[in-house]
Amino acid sequence: MSIQTDAVIVGAGPVGLFQVFELGLLGLKAELIDSLPQVGGQCAELYPEKPIYDIPAWPVIGAQELVDKLIEQIEPFHAGIHLGQRVEKFERRDDGRFTVVTSAGTEFDAGAVIIAAGLGAFQPRKLKAKGTDELDAGRIHYRVTERERFRGKRLLILGGGDSALDWTMDLAEIAESVELIHRRNEYRGAAASAEKVRALAAEGKVRERQGIITRAESTDDGGIRFDMMDLERNKFSVDGDEVLVFWGLAPDLGPIAEWGLDLEKKQIPVDTEKFQTSVEGVFAIGDVNTYPGKKKFILSGFHEAALAAFGVQKYVYPEQRQFVQYTTTSPIMHKRLGVADD
Image 1 (cartoon, rainbow, N blue to C red):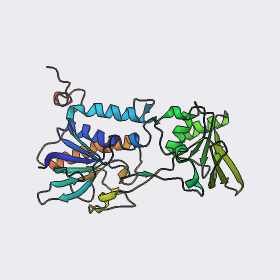
Image 2 (image 1 turned 90 degrees about the vertical axis):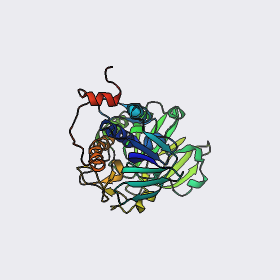
Image 3 (image 1 turned 135 degrees about the vertical axis):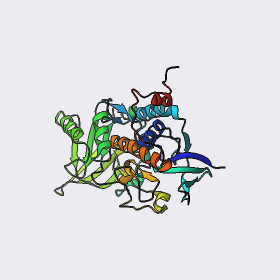
Image 4 (image 1 turned 30 degrees about the vertical axis):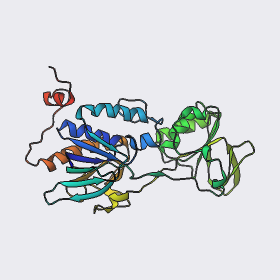
């Protein structure tokens, strides 16, 4: 028997979780599906201890802490959560509703579908330098789950994006040494973070390196050595106890790519009114979508979720009047949030 719901959300990362909240404020029921065994998406799977600095009202919040707060926030709306499942069947019916079936055989009858799949079935881009296969794999990390593991260690951090910069700043406090290795002088991460890293370098707490890895090998003490070539083709070597690789994620939409949606470089184009895709009734929010001016920030995804909720409401209940109500003053909102006075 299928589960009837107003919306199925594919992806239970921060943006997918917040979508539950925005739908709930409008009185819409949601069901969440995620291929991972836990909610939280990239935040929970790849960097649960990563500090995040650009969430409004939180000067700093851990990635897992953010996920926990979002789960707490959506509790009043009793969303169904279906983990460890991928969508295997997707069909838009003649009545405008959708049949969605997962790899576990869970079937949904949904008024709308919202794709919040991040980069899809993401996998971190792996270290593939010559000699990598002979290294101690336990010393190469693509996520940080135990920050204390790196205390007093010589760290080689690979990458120039936000994750590499954030962990460089954080681990410089506890590591014996940190060498940040990027293929060019300019970083891809936030300008403020890059400035802080350069300040740490000026203080001698971080060493910045530019170049590419030509070979990797184990050292006599069990560590790892990279033979490098810098931007002027000069050769040098760096040694460390542990390697952290933050080269981003290789996007793979998986079965979503076969849904008949317009695609643009493995992303889903949407409008910026409702964040609807080329298929009416299917919406896309967060890193999976693209539109002019798109910026891949969590807070951008939160904004998209708010507008998508109104788009879903209009699609599922076209005759229902839409108006904005504020959570601070609306008795209806207070009732839905479970904070109404008895």
